Image (cartoon, rainbow, N blue to C red):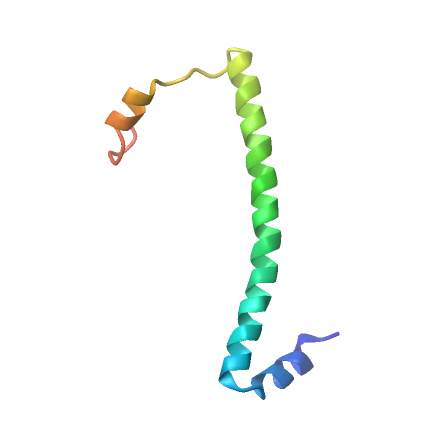
Length: 74
């Protein structure tokens, strides 16, 4: 189905109904995007844990991280 007839029909709705529909459409996209982002972050976390355990990555003490918060990276 083409989006054009759906858009034409949606534009005939009252403003409140269009706003509700727009919100529902955005939520359907955001939900899928959030699931993908969560999956990718999970993979990244696992990769970082593996790198740390294998000695390929070092840790930084929290006090040091907080000391540089808001300052440009060196």
